Image 1 (tube, rainbow, N blue to C red):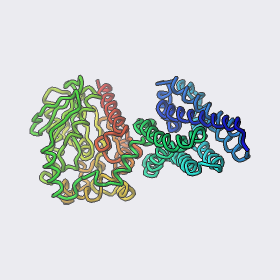
Image 2 (cartoon, rainbow, N blue to C red; image 1 turned 135 degrees about the vertical axis):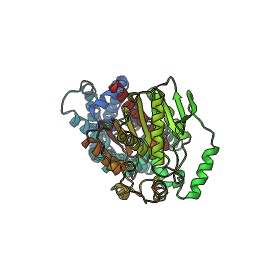
Image 3 (cartoon, rainbow, N blue to C red; image 1 turned 90 degrees about the horizontal axis):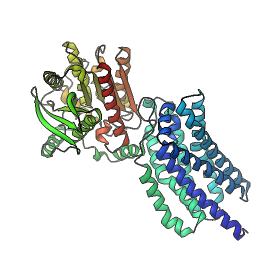
Image 4 (cartoon, rainbow, N blue to C red; image 1 turned 120 degrees about the vertical axis):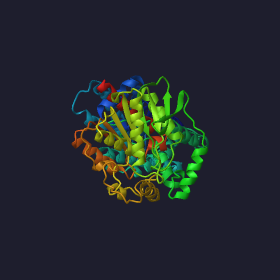
Length: 545
């Protein structure tokens, strides 16, 4: 029999453990992107740690206190199994918290070659070993009552350990080789189940009715609402180390409900899409303006956001598979780029296939660029940005300009750009069942429309830039999602650009689908990618000033 004093003390410790778990988990997620930050480079970790050092220190201290409470609580247990599991779990959390506190000044001062060893040790202890031990500890304690909630909570802990293990594996692999679909599933599962373990802690420390009927749904909803909008921890080249919760949810939903990506697969659907787009009223974010312009025979819109100036301009060639009209999504994207760079954006409505197949769209890109030059804007104050089909046009427009010995822009950006119309890239096979946007039907319609049903040379460098001589191109930023069939084509182009001496960068964004800043605008990765694009363009302008 357990006496009343012992029971009251035990309940108090469970309540304290519950509070510390909530404070430390939410605090570390919001201040430090913990634990995934431990997998990233120390330069980014230093930035995150110094942004809110007090909040980070308090959150790590809460984790340390939580470990101590677990040890004290477990040592009062009447079985050796509970004592050993709880003490080991508490030691893992406590040690990881101490390492985190030690890493803060080491990150800030960029010292010690063995810092990554400390980071990975802290990650393994806090995010893998501790949840595994706590799952066994929970089930060992729950033999008396509350087995259902304990079982669900233990499952949440096991899923947490599995998710963290997969994060570590993905961080060690090239982004294009990562297991991002499985990671997305586990991330969403942890979002829904980890709060159940906190609810079980609360139930052990209070009445059954309060914990199970009232507190459990509050914890699940509150935890999801607090963490789902958090941006992921950045990695070495600016792309995240792991996908955000929002990005993972969006990707899984689009995989489960293909109708959310209603891209046309035949000309009847295409005509319906165009009629709908023509009837849609143009909309812009607050603070942005739009002016319709004839840019050398190319219908265009000049979009300026905030205090953007027309002294520098970005030629934006939107996506749409070479067949769809640019709507409000590209307008919002253009406004965001304008705001980020302080330059106005010329959104060019190039001619569309199948009525105007290759090379009409590329020729319109050249015409719009020449028109900008005739407005007195130097090439050094211009940049070309494109997404999807427009990502292809940004590259081929620059290649055409180079071929005619025109002055080239200061920067090129291709987001999820088509680089090889032969469709022979490796990921057209390996990712065909994981890309909810560029399905086989959509690819056939768009690619056949632009290439006259494949009757032209698909290796023409002004059609497939992967086969072009790339030497002499301006600094180029390539971005691609790890879940799109274009992945291998973009990374191959990036390799060829580096070999040709083209300055720039290739970023593979884990867990992201095709053209995510326009397709998944709500995901934190969309804002991060737009920021990366704006910084790259601004940096390129500053370099040639």
